[in-house]
Image 1 (cartoon, rainbow, N blue to C red):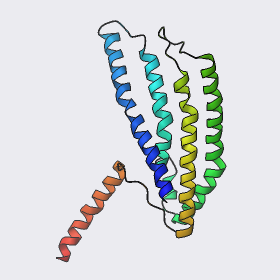
Image 2: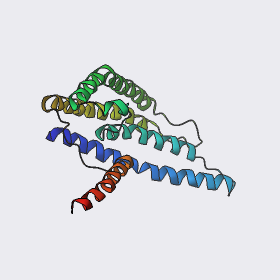
Image 3: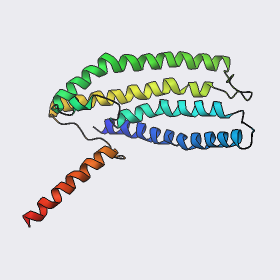
Image 4: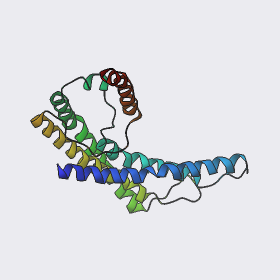
Length: 197
């Protein structure tokens, strides 16, 4: 269980670090809008910065979301099932869809990044032409991080199949929906507690 939580910690830290790109992206785009429409002097770098930062965020948020169990699924059925049934389904889906897709991403991303490094690729979208090869390297890196996190999730499924309960995850920010449900349950329980006194 310690190794699973260690993998979670690494991907959570990387995801939170990548999350700061939103702030940089927001500032860059806001400045571009101001420069373009108020100063009538658009920047040469804003387009490149926006897609590079968004791509970075997108690639590095995947392993974080997987560590948080935050990827999309049909929860309206899934959450009604017993934990062992959930684990069986998750385990099957990891081997049928997840690992083949992520390994293909990592392999194709590696070839894509290697070619970019080989030619010293720079952006052709702006006169500044920032280098792209180090950002393209994030594709196979994200693929490896997703694969490792996927292995941790498979281990969670195996533990759940053995014990009948999902092993704990790292505590992180809570989803708004969960907080609202907890507040509603507490509000409904308060009058009952008062009646008991």
